[in-house]
Image (cartoon, rainbow, N blue to C red; front, side):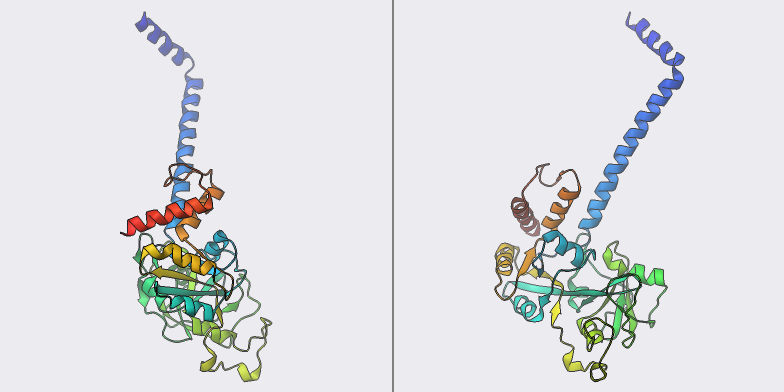
Length: 314
């Protein structure tokens, strides 16, 4: 009886082979699409996570945690305010701080973002599982008029060592206001990282300050007395944000609390990994593979992430 039923089913399929084949094809295509979307989502998440690693906190002007992460790390959007140089120096000298990476944003070159920073950027910045930045050609900048290119910038614009370029005021792809009185020389090209670093130009904080000395509120005009940018005035008055590495992971919460309650100006310190989780819960269906598919509030998620981060570091 069972054999005849199987035989009957097989003959029925043969009689409807076109519709049966279409059904099998539709099911296979649906499964492939589901797997493809899942892999794309996982790949995008891992790509975001690999942009910065080894950093304990990210500090900037008080706004939203996601906004702070997007403009300072992913070069998306613009900051609402800056951090004064005095506040940065005071927090960088904190007894719990091992190193800091200052970031100054707001200029561009042919659609690529310019990052003002210092030597700690090449010494301490890590990505994709604590991998450090490596130079494909040249060296870090040593003077205010030198620039280090990301791999994509050098490739797309076909720049080599020794090339001279001009930065533009603002982040628009079409530049109407250029700092053409202060050209920069390419002294280094970084190896590809698969992060926004590849699409960034890196100059010193002094270089950022030099091109804005005498800049009349962004109108493009310069006074004759300020056009040469005296060296004594190249200490920045403010930065956009800074990355913090602490001596001990146990001090993350205490230092974060000190920054968030800082009296001199309204600042905010966030855990990059916790903010990334918040970003993905906002964009995605709320699935969190680390926290067991639970929808956690921001405070609980930050606490859970910090605990996991401390245990992993130990």
